[in-house]
Length: 341
Image (cartoon, rainbow, N blue to C red; front, side):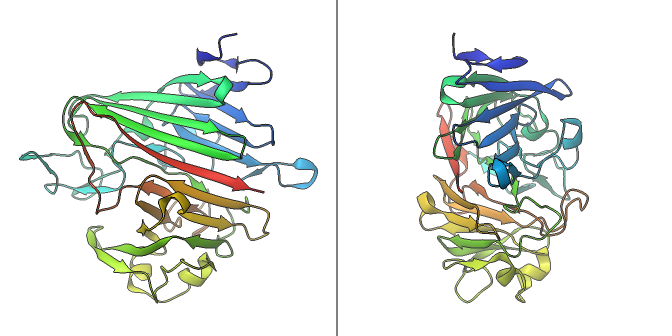
């Protein structure tokens, strides 16, 4: 059997290397990967997103889902970013601030004066093409954004590859290429709760992060300088709980309602480790990017998770790194989530 196939309903691969493919609504599909250790990952081509990450840590090898999830593409319409590939650029880009070779980009706004996560109906809300590589336990999604889509020069050829490995890691690779100079700074917007209960805050999760500086923001979301984390709630160089940081008094915490900042990593290959409150799970984060945004679900839909009931680990290029994608050059960014249990 050919193990590198276009994905359709049913099973891709042989019995030992099977990817279960099912309808997911709005013409989309879901893809279930599983390794020999019992870990499972569910993906969808709608937004090239992570739907579930299931770990066999409960009694009798019961599965715990540690990723905020919805049941169909219809349910991902609002909010649109949960688990999704955010591309070509994650975060806020303010109108008139971006110039490429003397050309000021006129970006499509979906916020007051700015483009958030590449504007309306961007990659996170589109149906991507998919290819399954059952032998390597991976799925690759591809999408082309037309020239000037939401104001970005292009066309931009995007790919998002997800590989579930035998060491219980989910390796995520993003690639971008364009015939024109454009911007490329993607990320994944998965939300985690290692206890598996999104109706309980993540305050008792333990975080350790190799980062000595953090970006602050103004009330309208503009960059407001890089600051040392020492003696602030943002210092996780030694292990401490999310709650230890979130409970402190700090202007940024009061402004943002929790963490919603980009930390600058000093050791991206050992970026961070998060431990579940019951000690059953450790999530080890590594990347080739210099920044990680942690957002603690401060002001989102309370029907999906309580305030501060989840956290993101959005690896991307920080304000100090260039987001420029040169013509006919391919840029790759990757993130690896390894689960120890």
